[in-house]
Length: 265
Image (cartoon, rainbow, N blue to C red):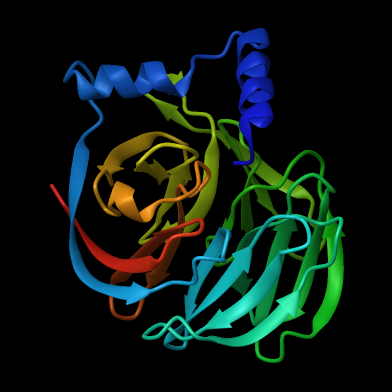
């Protein structure tokens, strides 16, 4: 999610825990040896996206996008016009916080921070900050199933939190053919499944919310031309779902475009 040093720390941590790396899971699927189906995509529409937005969380709401952007001193909570990418409303998140995942539940916006174990609560209409909450470990992605908040922390585990007291209601391990899938990043709840960006991978995992089993991979390679990427951290990250119209939106950190896509077998 962050820089090369974090990649090294994450790798060493996984080795120390004797965990299966995601790259091995990926290879088994790509070589046709696995039972997890792979999906493609087609682009339905393309819209502009702010290249200064280090996208960490994305939500579709009332025809526009709610976006959480990261990096210390540049983090924000935004209301963004879908068609133009114009920022209609903006809340600056002060240093030392590095903003992360975002979700909307019952008129409230919940926003994570990376390493400070603190989240912020806002009124979804006014963007007025109404509270804070805490959680152990890192905060990466955030979504909800209509009742509970669902949090990723860079591991292969997802925590379900009670939005009233932020206690852990349950934890699931995300597995593809029995192997842990780490680096789960930005999340979105889509038709009963959890969609998860895999950090530094051009793919999205479709996860069974009850068990954590990976139901499929959505391969996103080629969505944005390499000539339009100017930063090694400008990776795929940002999934939003328009439940009313069945539209799926994706973008990336520092990307110049946001896409509506249709998942294809």
